[in-house]
Structure formats: structure tokens, C-alpha cells
Amino acid sequence: MLTASAIALIAVAATSAQAQTTLTIGTVNNSDMIRMQGLTPEFEKAHPDIKVNWVTLEENILRQRVTTDIATGGGQFDVMTIGTYEVPIWAKQEWLKPLDGLGDDYDVDDLIPAIRSALSNDDKLYAAPFYAESVLTLYRKDLFEKAGLTMPEKPTWDFIAEAAEKVTDKEAGVYGICLRGKPGWGENMAFLGNMAREFGANYFDADWKPQFESEGWKKAVTLYVDLMTKYGPPGAASNGFNENLQLFGQGKCGMWMDASVAASFVTDPKQSQVPDQVGFAAAPCGVEGCPNDGFNWLWAWSLAIPNSSQKADAAQTFISWATSKEYLELVAEKEGWANVPPGTRTSLYENENYTKAAPFADATLNAIQHADPSPTDDKPYYGLQFAAIPEFQGLGTAVGQQMAAALSGSTTVDQALSQAQAIATREMTRGGYIKN
Image (cartoon, rainbow, N blue to C red; front, side, top):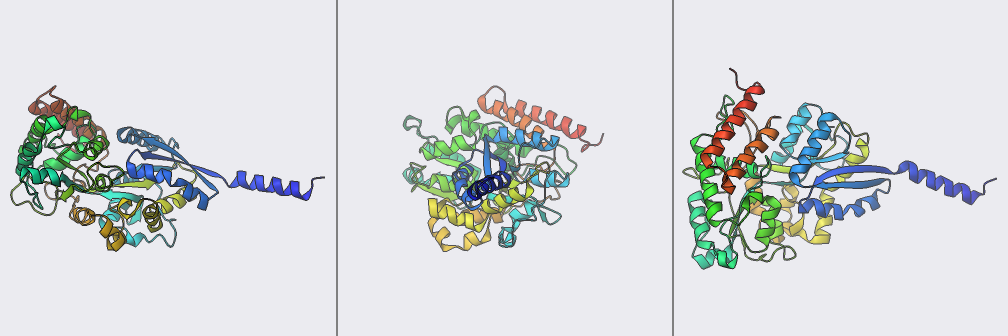
């Protein structure tokens, strides 16, 4: 006969084995995500019945893996890190579970309206934003002062070209400008798609015909290649967001136009060699007048649950924790207010602890609020740095390879744009967008 203590031990073991749910989460190797992984023990301590298994991948590889998994119903992940491109497409295809169990205290109404809308379908939230971003011009105030330059609040690309030349000092290892060159629809094409829009161009016209041979695209890519060839770092065609983040933090970039989320890292003394010398301005424009709206991309790295997951309740418990107000306070406690994930909640930008600690807060919120990815008369799709159609992921990456080839000098800008036009026309015709 078993003793009472033995029975109790068996009951505890059985309860532990039964209650333990393991979530597999696929995520990108960005700094905010890596920080979240470091704080996972805090979640597991509060939820001893849930264990988290992380799969951390480079951006392009993550996108390939999660897209393949969700399209085939593979079930490899219980939570996926995806963005504003995937959510509306995958929600319509019923590949994602709606997030209707985040808890009464989650306060979904606190999510910044533009971000909430981008992650919803039919007024249902299908992904919760971990951090959100637009685009900023980051620049070295000390180098500008030395060169006798003053950064305008809304710079033009003509000014950026002039400044890149003046602050470049290759002997000292300082390059006037750093921009994304690594091919990928979410790497170099995120930047170039936005830059083309800054010159008045789109991916497609109102009839879905590709526009890569338009005047705006030619001006944008020609300037991009010229700037990076003359004033950019060596090997620029291999540099994505993370590589440029490292270069800027090492003091090697005079300017960098990229995601606003980078601001907290380049101003952090633990991660940057120039934390007190970083200034912020709007994204450049190439058209006359520099309007406030329309030149800012909008993106949110977000957590979603694929329909193939059998652990939706536990997954929503984790997502609720990782994207909550309380998580922001946890990061602030551990890392300081300037390092909390930005761009997701209105209350963060009403918090004086944050706005005092983050010199980039106003610039980030302003950029997000002035981003308008909605369809317009001259473009029939949602998105600025991307087009929210299923075909864009493959098409954008193929075009990105052509742009990287132009940047590396293995082809000309005209040849790259001609190839891009041919690739896009073929895919859009095959997809039924262009009618013969």
C-alpha cells in the first residue's frame, strides 16, 4: 500500500506533467526580440504550466520558414512573428486564429489606431504588435556640426546627397550614408519601395501594371546606387538592417535612413559608441514641397497564432504578456524606459517617464501617425514599402536581387530596372492582375 507522502508525490508529478504546455515561437533576430527571450523566465515564473521554446532566425529565413509552414499547415510553430504585410493576407485566407482571448485587462483600445487597423481584418485583431515603426533619418550631430551643416526637419534627397559628400571621411572609417543593400522584399526593397514613393512612384499603377521603368523609380535607384558607391561602406550589397545598425553604432555612418525602432539602440550607451551624437529627422523626399503624409513606411513586428496550432489558449496567454502595458514596464525596470519596444500603445507616448528618456519619441510617433499605406487613386494596393498581395513576397525578393546586383556593379541601373519590370509583369500577368 502506498503511503500518503508517496501518493502526494505521484499526484504532484502527474499534475506537473499534465499541466506543462510547450509553445514553439518563431521569431526574428532583432534586438527587441532577443531581449524578449531574455525576459521569458519572468513569463514562465508567472505561468509555470507553460514552457517557451524559441526558434530565432535571420529575417529572410524566418519569412521563408513561417510562410511555408502556415501555407502547408505544418504546425511547426504555435506563435509566429509576422508583420503588417502578412496579417491582412493570411487572415483573409483563414490561416490565423483571431486574438479574442487576450484578457479583460489587455486594453486593445490603447493600441495606436493605425497599427491596430493594420493587424485586423473585419474589425478582428489577428496579430498583436510587439513593436511598431515607421522610417526616420538618423544622423550624426557632431559630424554635421563639423561640416557646417544643419539637418532640416524635412530633408530633401538633394540635401542628403550634399551632406553625404561633406561628412564622408573614408580615411577615418566614416561613411556619409548607410542604406540597406541586402536583397529581400523586407530588406532592400522595404527601403527602395519607400524611396521610390518619395520620388512619386509606386510598385504598380491603378491597373496593376508594374512601374519599375517609371521616372520615379529611375531617379530613386540611380541616386541610391550613386550615393552608396561614392559615400557608402564597402560590401553594402550585403548589409541589411542589423548590419547597418552595427555600423552606425560603431560610429561609421554619417546618416542612416531606416526603421525608427533603431533609435533606441543607437542612443543606448551599452550598444552604441555615439549615443549622445544622434539626431533625428523625417524621411527624405524627392518631390517638390515635401508633403507631411505618404513618405513613411508602416510596419509592426507582431505575434500571431497559426490555425495549425493546437495550443491557442496558451499562445494567447503568452502574446497577451509580451505585448502588454505590463511588459513595457518590465523592460523599463530591467533596461530603462528608453529601451521599451516602441510604436504600439498610445499610453506609452503619454508617459512622461518614456518621453523624457527617449529623445526620439516624438519623431517616431509623428512618423507613424503620418504614414498612410491605404490604397489611393494611383495605387490599388495597401502598403508603401510593400504591396499587400500574396505574389509580392516572391516578386519583391526577385526584384531585390536585381537592385543588389546594380548596387554591387554587376549590372547597370537601367538593366536592373528592365529586369525588374519583366519579372513583375510576368508574375502579375500570371496572377491575373494584368488582363491581356
